[in-house]
Amino acid sequence: MWTRGLARWYEVHGRHDLPWRATADPWPILVSEVMLQQTQVTRVAGRWESFMARWPTPEACAAVPLEDVLREWQGLGYPRRARGLHDTATVVAADGWPDTEAGLRSLPGVGAYTARALRVLAFGAGTAPPQDVNIARVTTRAALGREPHEVRQAALEEQLAAGRPRAMSARAFTYALFDAGALHCRARPLCDGCPLAATCASRDRLALSPPERRRRSPRYQGSTRELRGAVLRAMLADPPPSSIGELQQRAGPPAAGRTATDIAVVLDALVHEGLVIPTARMVRIN
Ligand code: SF4
Image (cartoon, rainbow, N blue to C red; front, side):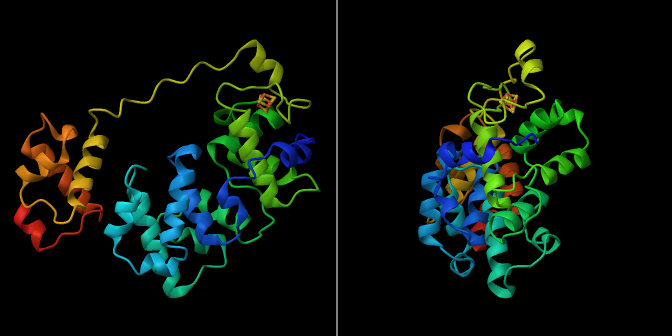
């Protein structure tokens, strides 16, 4: 089996100290999964603890205005994730957690990956692990000798379903694959010390022809994303700005050199996405 050696390696080398792994409560696990979607583990750790200290339950999160959650989220980026969490907290506080994967997928901001992750990591389901980029990469390489884009999803699912060592729960198997992917089977793999190296179907291929370095992601500085973050931060201040000119000034360097129209367009988009709530003071801005 392609996962021979994984259980033992995970016991010794797994990232057991990640704080969200100490619980099987779906709320803290959901918060961690949402934070980790677009933010590195090292940046998430302290932020997750701070979020959980403020809102340890969906009920606690649902009881505060979205603005409070957005303020707490500042610096993590992609604030739509915070809105999804707040919306989900509101649904769960009212109706409880859905008890099926399909039900979980109906929660705001919860897609196929997160629903499966919740089932396996929080609700004790014995299904195959969720398919994220890292799990797909380590599995297709180790089991099938291919890169993820060369493999049908059904074939990947089959390997994940059949690959769980008998000694591991579905939850431990999932965490072990996360860790093997994060610590060894990166885009450019570090095969020495990898728990799957003994039977890996890609090791020789990748030693002869390592994947090319990934292209760097577009610069954040000067981007619309940076401007959105600055405008949102300014709008969450108390009191918020009362004109586009004031908003531009308070948004700081990311807004320098932008026109009032640029700022208004970004503000409109944030309102449209439900991240800035139109109030009487907003009317004065527009
Ligand atoms: S041996 Fe190398 S290619 Fe195979 S799973 Fe491990 S890190 Fe990935």
